Image 1: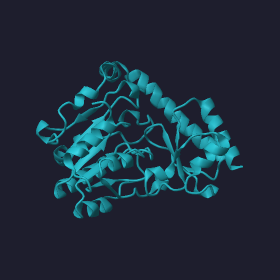
Image 2: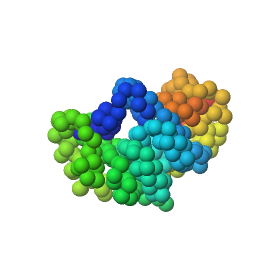
Image 3: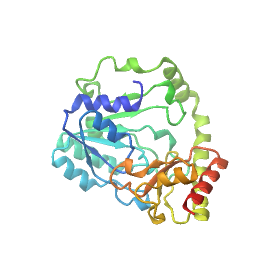
Length: 294
């Protein structure tokens, strides 16, 4: 298909009706909310726990939501914006709960190739977790983030058994995938792993650099280093910049971050910074952010 966003929306369109609820785990990828709105669906927010230490799923909250009638769980794995690699046991628990309550789990795994080399937890594909996960899961992946191929348009959706493919999915969905995206995906997944290893090391170095820069220039910002991806979730609540600190950083420092409130409940006072850049630009960004606060 063209991209993961198209895949998520078409799966949801096939298995829901307007007014249905979809379980989200905020703060979570900001596009999830407009995707649901476009389909007339309601987010059922079960916020992540322990954000200060990297976050974890609220399994009891997920169980309550499913027991109350929610029939779709939309996971972000690895989690965006927290950079959390979800543990196998938690994924297995989600699968068992979904199986028990007749729910579908849609797992957005677009950041899977970008687990940092120093992470103590490997990425676990949802469909590999258990018999329950293979019964209830649809996984979506793409080379677009890890190899920077988004403009070429290619993503894939996977189920464990073709009989599990949601009924009502449009038959021409694969027409949206670009031919250049298909060739690029094959090249990335077969011959691009050495290049990816270098990228992963550099992203991990930027994450460590950001930690040092914040300690020196913006000690009021709290930041837990991610285990995957090139996104940093910054707790700016101590700076007194209001619900959307990204507005102040843009207006006063000319640094564009993603606004925390757009990531759902728990996002107020936060901002998301893309660290997939050079050491020089990272240092300049934090310098400008510090000047904006001053």
